[in-house]
Length: 354
Image (cartoon, rainbow, N blue to C red; front, side, top):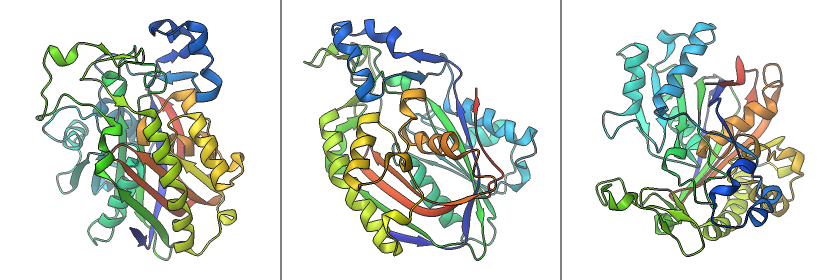
């Protein structure tokens, strides 16, 4: 599905990452595989360091911390927020919505919209699409898109497929009206028939958590995880990404009437280093225009990898420069989405530690 929007811009991005660092070398003994064999995966997959929240830290804690930081520094005013859109798959509670929790903790105005969206790897794009739609309303002038997850708390530390890559984090993206601004092009697709490629089997109403669902079992390949934990079929996910993402990017560029060579930056979700390298090769994009340095430094915090990518690689440039950027997220759902837009002249674009 191709979508277009007019008169919107991103005026600031703040990424909030846990200060706690967990290193792959220190974790290699957690797995049933020989340590030497496990360490051989490090350069290929991009296993390095990842940021993990302390026990008890939730999505609302990261978001409230980041928003208060912006308020304190005068980069965002509480009274200017007309809508709060939170994209997460690790809410504080089943109810109330975590966006309402954040609104209440900060004492934001009542004359606003609070909305939770249950999405993961493509969550940054989906949050932006929701913000663009809300900004079509005359009463809404500024939307704050929160993208946050703490999925390390739902990932087995004895699962070499997932735990070395998983990270926690949050991003705060301010989206507002930009009369006369460049057209924005987007693309989104979903395929629920492949939903089991990335899933947490237990914990919802279909399979409530019980003592039995918390018992780790061997998956047949040496990884130990419980039904309460994240399960990822790596081969299925890799095949999905290589098959579906390149055509999506080419379709997006065609719809926008541009060549891939005309796009300055490809700021993609980063499941692992190997996948980003293969995507760059398949699309014939120079690796320097598709950075792949997030997951090995911070881990895969689902959709948060994209704003982290922006802040890490372009934060120092985006205050006084403008670029054509392609965002792309792909994963859980299965869902894949991309956005082509001009970014720059931002009021802030940085990373802070929680």
